[in-house]
Image (cartoon, rainbow, N blue to C red; front, top):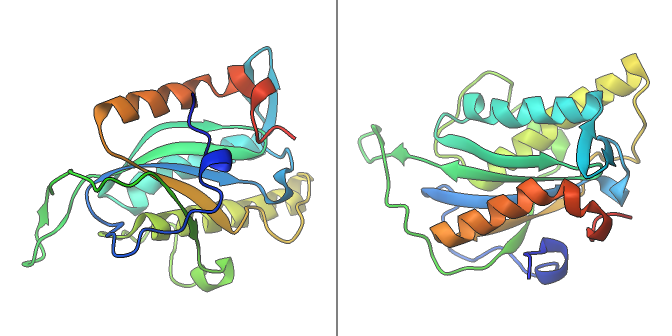
Length: 204
């Protein structure tokens, strides 16, 4: 059975005491507020991105510039949600030097995280200033802020479809990837997401 974050982990909470800046891989799902179809359409099992969708893609890969200790793996942009795998690859030691860390991860299945309000992120994170040892939550807050800002510009300048108060849902879903088998399974799920759109729980 395929992993479905909406079905399996809707009511889960963040793992108390877990260091979300530690080395490891994380599977992230973010949904558009009210599940509006803003980023394109699926046609014959393929996702056709519109300009807004291509903007989301651009900011995903900018994560590696903003957070040099993060690596962007598989991702897919769907009409009303976004899946990706983000890796923490290193952090600073006690002397402030960058070092690779033990990638062993706790046995934890998943959680939904609550990001800080977007307005609180505006002054803290710019597009260029680099940040190390950020949590996955901080990185996703930044991603949501940057994409929301540019989407608003798209509405004003190019007539993109308007959204209701927020571009993204406040909560999102995060799953700690514990081994190679889990990574391969989730990667396949991401790659096949457009072809399975007809049966997708987010398709509504």
